Image (tube, rainbow, N blue to C red; front, top):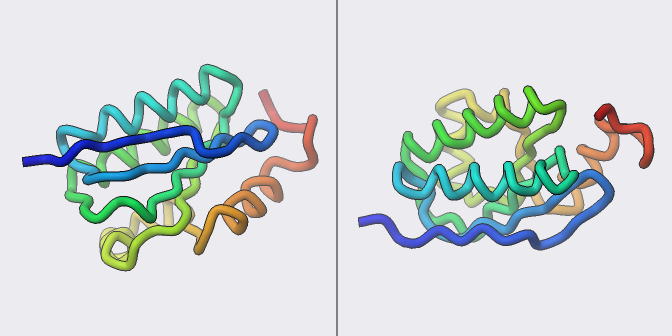
Length: 127
């Protein structure tokens, strides 16, 4: 049985939304994560950082949800970055090669720095 997944907007920085993710990421909860991220994009935040420290479990369906979200954000000229990924999930991302597709950083400030470097100074983001 899946536990509830909560996704909340924790911070906003220019074109970047930081979403705090808490709960299990699986078949039942993947669409909720995607919906929250795409809602942020719809509100003018094409670059999404997922703060993952509150995710104790992620299965293959959860990984698939992350990949689909990554592709959708890139199609919308945005980006997806993970932050504060728990060790177990970090190993799963590495074993599956997803860490080469979706960048993961130690914490939110580091993730924000990487996204800012990739998108350029404020006001120069591609739209």
